[in-house]
Length: 323
Ligand SMILES: NC(=O)c1ccc[n+]([C@@H]2O[C@H](COP(=O)([O-])OP(=O)(O)OC[C@H]3O[C@@H](n4cnc5c(N)ncnc54)[C@H](OP(=O)(O)O)[C@@H]3O)[C@@H](O)[C@H]2O)c1
Image (tube, rainbow, N blue to C red; front, side, top):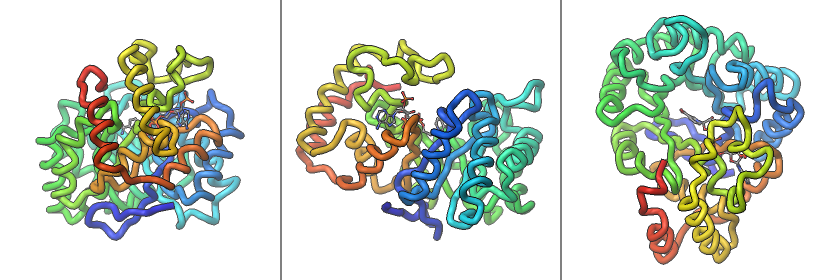
């Protein structure tokens, strides 16, 4: 595994982290989920990304992760970096799904209970909710650190203007933002131009999610929607309407470049995200150990020639492909 420092912090993270958004819920096979977590950890992926609402059902990914920890890995807690988040819809009523202090504090308490952890290594505000003043949200994060429920804090998907405000508030409270989480892939490069530099200038690490565009950048949709794939599942977040002919055609063109590099398209897509040195880590999702192994092999080639970048840009510098 390769590790990078998270911004200006002393914390290092593996360049590949494992996300539990899909495939770890109560609707999924628990033994496969266990194998993926154990395999990841054995390969040096010590960073696991959770959120209160991951499942389905919401909360069940945290419950399952807690079971795996207890059953298999309890003695390794200090070798692991475990994240959770709050801010999206989780429980009924007006307190169950925004970025208020009420939601964040209650949610963190619930997440600790579900996972059986004493503290999270990082707790994020999952999103700006459009209403709650960021001062309130950031103060809740700061207080979670002061209460010993989180070691570090992070923000996810904040727009550039509010991103800076968050960093300023956190810095003043001496609880600097460890990680800023943004969606980033060959099919979604917008954060690279909008958010990354602001994070880097403020000493925050950057962690990218959905680096494979939820599976599109693996070539699995090149001949339609395969059974069992995320786009085929009623509980999957990838809509079949997002598997467009233009995106599929672009994947086929990218695969030609990947083949010359001796990589699968998925491996090249992950390497592309990590080629930006501002990025600390990218969070992958997997539905099998085989996928995880395939993605781990990315680490053999993370660099691109100028010619390769030129060829890739000719294909992906096309906003009709972007999410
Ligand atoms: N902060 C936020 O708001 C936010 C939002 C979204 C995600 N996240 C985090 O980011 C993590 C990753 O997101 P993501 O799951 O969308 O990431 P992703 O890596 O873009 O997509 C993962 C999916 O791609 C397919 N896949 C992965 N490797 C493959 C391979 N080698 N061959 C074939 N198919 C492969 C699998 O889909 P199939 O199921 O079809 O096999 C897998 O479930 C989440 O788990 C979560 O922790 C954060």
